Image 1 (tube, rainbow, N blue to C red):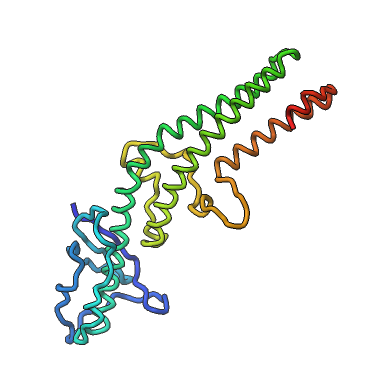
Image 2 (spheres, one colour):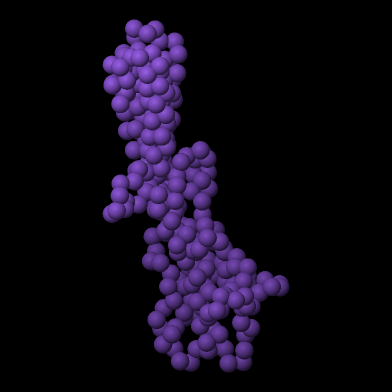
Amino acid sequence: MASTITLAHALDDSHLRRSLPAASAASVDISGHHHPRFVRFEPAERDGGGTYHFSPFTGCEPEPKVPAAVYADRALPREQKRELEWQYEAARAVWSKARLRRQASPVLRQAVPMWDAWTNARDQLRATFDAFWQTPDEMWRAQVLRLTDAQQAAKSAAEAWDEIAGRLANLASDQVHIAGEEHELLLTDVAVELGLDATHWWIDHASAYAPTPYYRMDTPLVADLTREIDQQRQRLLDVAHLVADRALAHELT
């Protein structure tokens, strides 16, 4: 099955809308400069642009780039050079999607049990905290120990998730960087193609996972979990102060 991509309009160097160039008497044969997977171009009936057809990309090919020979060919009119530039731009967009599918598919499959591990750890943490409402006074310290264990387990699961989410975010960011936002392929769509449901997965923008040389910054899920843990500890600390339990307050700080 051939791959296609539709360009609503082309852009000139000033980034203003323009139509694809019409064939002129001075046109020369450019088939030798076509991308190897180019099949044909179907112009739109109006408003310029059209649909490029390519044979399927695997994503293993080199990134499509206009050959240097195109610019070195002095017999080639500028309009046809621009036509080839648009063709390779379309090829890059299609290739970038095939590349994302190839690179992200195994990572998405690997992410499934890691997301399940996180949600299980989060639910266990919340259940452990909620259990304080039914815990006798003399058992609170034991319950605090259970809570700290659940907090650590949740943090480990969150760190593991953020690591793989960061990998996926970087792959998605690379695809958008190559193809542009108008040709973005969503990770959730790739997941659907694999029969996976990633609708509720927490995957932030790639920049949220990038380390900074200036200060330590928690990754997205870890940061959110840390806020929840801090709220839990503050609630217990408030109770300890209210009942004047200094020993318990010391354990919570």
